Image 1 (tube, rainbow, N blue to C red):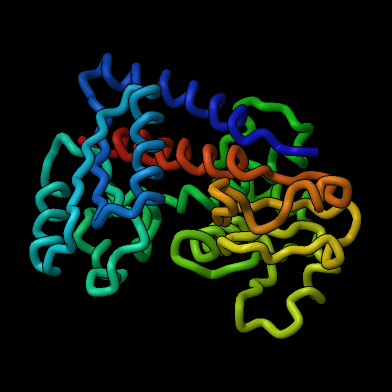
Image 2: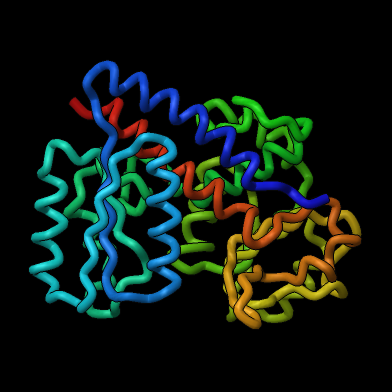
Length: 289
């Protein structure tokens, strides 16, 4: 069965729109500043999607586009300026960054209540992509109903995940900063045991064959039908292009008769990821004076 991530995302966005409207009544605006370095078509596409969703929810969206790579100090000063702006509720830095700017310490210059992607150590917020994966799992195992129960609250949901994931073998494929790493972080927070497979893993297909749930976040085709057991759940967060079309880490036509549930690409985990970014932003606005 194909999981329609757009429907799940649409429902969560509706709830967020109501919350943003309530905050506006209290004269509290919700505002996001987005940093992008360079002009990668894929990254420009991602920020454009974020901008469209922001408008639909009623969020102020500021796009800070540095077409050429600035020096480190200039970049940090720009981040500090946005962080110090009281009208800005949250800040994101579009990844991946150029090598000369790519360091986790960049997020130390974003105050903890405005760092809504969950990159900082001891961050307040959980990575949106990981929350999107958990919402997908909740959808599958809680009756496939799209309602408020799908919105993840890790404190409340740990008991739910402990119950449904008991005796299930979970495999996460990938460990990159934009995929496997944030997903793994949230799985750990939810107390879900998993095996992390990456390019250094010997005979990864042996783990795939026994898995009940496989979460992929690689950006190339890594799963073949022969590697899967019947009834497996497949959740994809990876993106690749084939003949000009976006695809995930498996071929949907090949696996749809093997998997009990699978997410399509596009239209699977991606839209849910974006709305969880805005859920974090709305929660950040509530925390700030």
